Image (tube, rainbow, N blue to C red; front, side, top):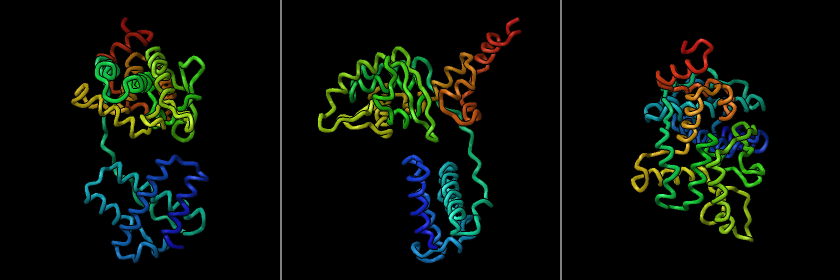
Length: 305
């Protein structure tokens, strides 16, 4: 069977049967189209007529070598490898191929990065910035920043949040995170108030003929995207705003750091962040020696004695 046909079938399977997120399916599609192009460059024939049975380990290594020479980031290369592995696993499951050469090469070692987080004064500055200088939509943008900081949710989770997801008093919400897993996130009094202040302005923007359930909307009255939220954060943290670049994910890092630095149980933080593995949560434990000593003295039975 031709590789192009298997890829198309695999993308439909990932979307409709496995119910992977649109971002995941789009990522698969981009990686696998690149895979076809790189195989064609290796002389395996026209992309439309490459057979999966003709692909071997050396072909895959040549693809990785090309990406490395193009100075692609380790995360980009690893995503490419993951996409190719998923494709071959699907091909084997459907009996389109009796081999999976992608299992024979390893992912690229990722450089360890310390997550960026904000100080308390930096958080206050960015949360207050929409009121100091309205660059886009003050009420909405203030609510977005407060919810990001108080809940620790991912930007994609915030974008998918709907009015119906909120609790009756507005102090929490149920969201669907990675792996289609539901979890409850919580809002601080500041976030609750900011959302309440925003809702009347939101209602005024909603068109009667096109009602939407999205909590956060754009100027046209439709659901705000993750990309739109990133743009909002970049505007308020640019030279026009705080002059300290901030991404939506920095709020998540800061949320986790703040809880852990105050002695919160890492497993509770793991649950609040929606991490499937505690090792992911441990990336946020970049505490100073002073913070560690202070937490030890406060939390350990013999601490400070």
